[in-house]
Amino acid sequence: MSSLKSWIEAMRLRTLPVSVAGVICAVGFNISDGSFLIVPAALCLVFAVLCQIASNFANEYFDYSAGRDRSGREGPRRGVTEGDISPRAMKTAVFATLAAAAIVGLSLTLWGGYWLIAAGIAVGLGALAYSAGPYPLSTHCLGEVAVIVFFGIVPVNLTYYVQALAWSPSVFAASVAIGLMGANVLIVNNVRDIPDDRAVGKHTLATAFGVRPMVVLYVVNAIAAALLTINVWLGASDMWSAVPGLYVGLSVIIALRMASLKGRRLTPLLGITAMLMLVFSVLMTSALSVG
Image (tube, rainbow, N blue to C red):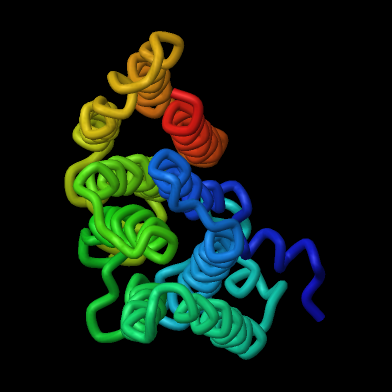
């Protein structure tokens, strides 16, 4: 019988700031233009977190089913692969979590309209397509692209829309920035997993190009994210002007550490990258809210 600890590990709590950051970022823009509504914003947050948990569960189940996971891997313990959670239980958890997300998503149509059903279906399919189907995105060097779309562009713009009932170029730019930050979390994950992924034939950008190019990409993503949100910082008071520079500087330090560490010693950097992304989004929301 699987333990609560095994299920908590399968949720991959250290990565959940990725989904939270996108919603917080959007809320900042809603507060800034006076369109903030607490109920749909809270529902968007629950929906985003549930979708990420479902994606994490699906990744564990489908990687196990396809033989892409092996016992004793460098990363955090995989419950299904190690026998802590049965494959059937994990499969049930995937679709139960997606069902819960669907219920929350349906409630958002009260604010955003029924077209959100199509958007919700696309998000659900994306959560599965990352690891499942005839062309799993995570095994064809498309994991980072999927993160940019489903953890950046989609949640930020939709969270903003269900409150403002409008689209914004500034919000879109910020959504790409959030996506790039989320992609950096995956970069650390995939650099850590290079030996395991190569052993089972899993193709990621990290296995294709190696450590050094991924370290460079990590820094490039950080710089691009700072530049994409520069209007936010320039439009706020001087107290916020140092934030983008600090973010890039800390990202460079993390990248240098990533270049010098191997295996499970990289896992803390994954959590630090996710928390840095969350802090950046909170500070951006603060800058948008108080100026």
